[in-house]
Image 1 (cartoon, rainbow, N blue to C red):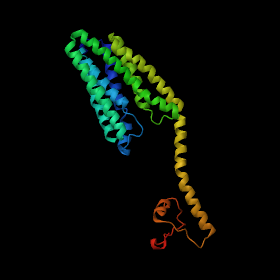
Image 2 (image 1 turned 45 degrees about the vertical axis):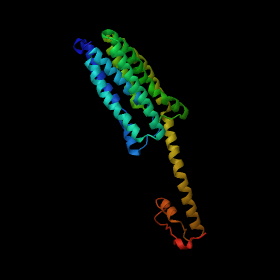
Image 3 (image 1 turned 135 degrees about the vertical axis):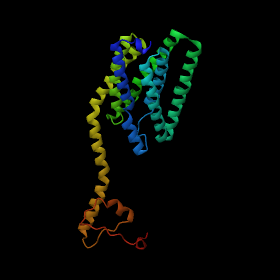
Image 4 (image 1 turned 180 degrees about the vertical axis):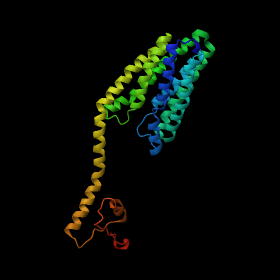
Length: 280
């Protein structure tokens, strides 16, 4: 179905779908910027990006078979962006996460996609090929919507949305609405159906985010206060010692002196004893 045969209203939804999907592909950028700054994957998982890459590859193939320019354009861009995400994840992931991601990539994006290409290209033709690819694409499109749900168990268990990709979930939900109407107007079952489930799952994720958002802020405050307590207790002990024996200034090793440097007031002085006087 070539783009010039697409009704005007459907074409408008397709263009809007391209815009929303492009924003969806860019949604994880803040996450990966944080990974780049910390040089760690920070508990985020690679599954959504590996599955999204495979889905984009399959939809690109489906668009080529159907000669749908709108599908070809956005999924070609998506393949490039998702590949960059997977590569970045591999660079900064721990050894175990890196091995898992490589296995997923090889099984799904290399072997799996290769099997789809070989079987459909050589064993089927014309409308039958499009039908087979459509079913496969629809299956993995559902996987794109389901993949972020792997983090929901962690959200419910920790009662925190710290690692929940809410921006990605929001854009996936918006994209599901737009692409549903595109598929519905074109009477393309393989595009419309998965986006119904995508909308439902997207709403579930956003509801959970709204429920646990306040808990995340509380947990963050408690974590920060816990991190400050040890230093404050050490500083209080030093101050108390100085008050009890004002003629004796506290004597601290160099390392402890550096640790307390930011926490001691300007009117207090830390005296470092020469290393030769500190003996067992």
